[in-house]
Image (tube, rainbow, N blue to C red; front, side, top):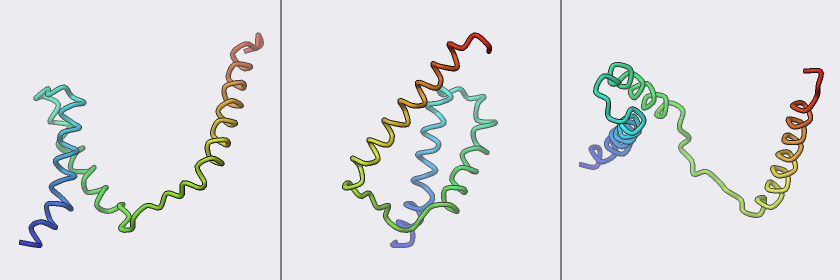
Length: 90
């Protein structure tokens, strides 16, 4: 019984979630399953192969510094895009 629960957590739950996501994306169109089924299988196998078996660590003490960095670089990027868009030589 324990192996079955482990199997369900490892394979069936991601398969169910990917299938549900495909149904939402394709709006339930039955003809989309020709492309959807292989994509779902590939996604679940890739998830199993690439997943990390440790808990992700989120350090909240680093969040203020990251927020400042993110806002600064977002502002710089926005100014750069606006500058390029307003240049007459483009």
